[in-house]
Image (cartoon, rainbow, N blue to C red; front, side, top):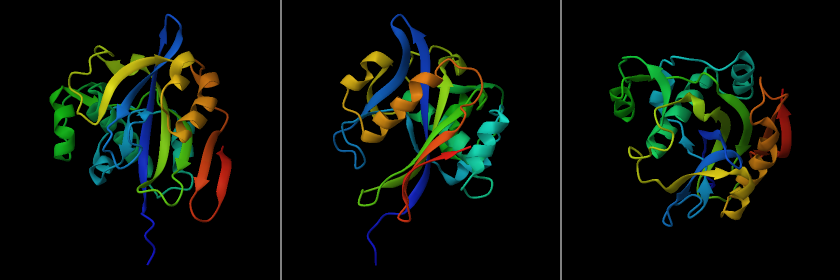
Length: 223
């Protein structure tokens, strides 16, 4: 029997804003005892939960984002990926991507978000990257990366007081300084694709996908 862990669907959010020295992105540091990527500076994100598929989104991204999310994915997975992205941002940073509204959360993991008086919204999300964790890692993910402007955040984008303790040293980092941090290799790759997209209107021409799915390895593009 193979010891290779199952590949879990996951979402990562690259929140960005303009700064005095150019664009900034929100990052935090994983703990030294974390099984996956200990001590690394990362964007907020993680595996999607079953309840994420039941969340009704108050806002949707554009059609190109939804079509590309559906490629090479389980039917109907798009909603769970978007909802999971919003939940992970809430849990790891305490920031709200939503719209004022009352709603019934489908699981305890969503109760804190709902208590803020906001319904989750993926309006303005841009799907910009997808990567599958290589074999021989303690955990493996099929991660979708979303680029989101800080203008989508409800409230103060520097108020991390409601964050859990999964990420420390949460901070807005100028793109020009990001590579001075201890980053996972895949984050380095994503950053190479990211800079030309920040501040542009409309979806990217294509979405790079890094394959490490035991069948083929390499980079293809979802169009």
